[in-house]
Image (cartoon, rainbow, N blue to C red; front, side, top):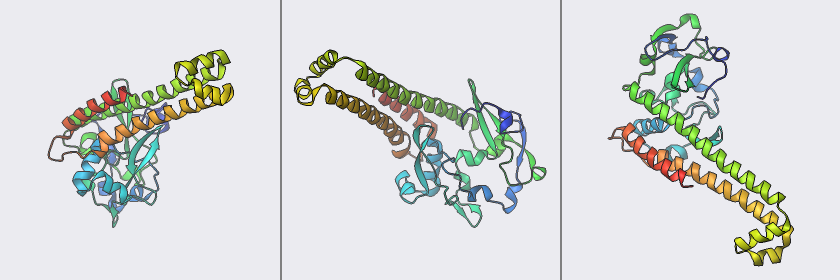
Length: 272
């Protein structure tokens, strides 16, 4: 979840840390599974840690989960990321209960809590009007106990790294698009003599002669746009391949593996 402009629009107006008490306890949901039955689109976004846990819990690979339509790849805020497929509710919901409860994704663990990011990390907040259970029936529970992750401090560090990385990925893609846009504008505005000089520099004198100035200009513009989109796809494919698709060793510490992959992923993206 990304930053919101006004916490009062989505919550009780309070912020919590991991050791605060919050009225989120649902007493085992009392047989309710409405949130898991809903068509929630691509909102249950999966982090690499979520994928690591899904592989542990199901014994299936990323490709297998994808081919069985349990997860899908979606465009989320300008980048491709995996999410639980929720168009007909969650496929891991059986008989009103979660088959992978111990291994459920972070967003599922949080609900009805959310994260509000700031320059130093994030705080938790309680979402209002989202949980079907009457607020009067909910109980106070410690945030860390509600989330139920064994090493919450290490996970918090991971979440902050992941959030920072996603901002980097989006900025990288934005930079590629901006550079392409500037080049297209330049190509549209340069005179024919400069265009001919460009063709010479690119060793495309013959093509310039065959096409003429107008068609050559169009071709250079199209090539610029296509090249930028190819670079963007390569960035997103690198992220999916290194941080999701390449199988994690479930017998090794996740956070160490993630740090190793993140360094490699950043190095590859910076070269693009």
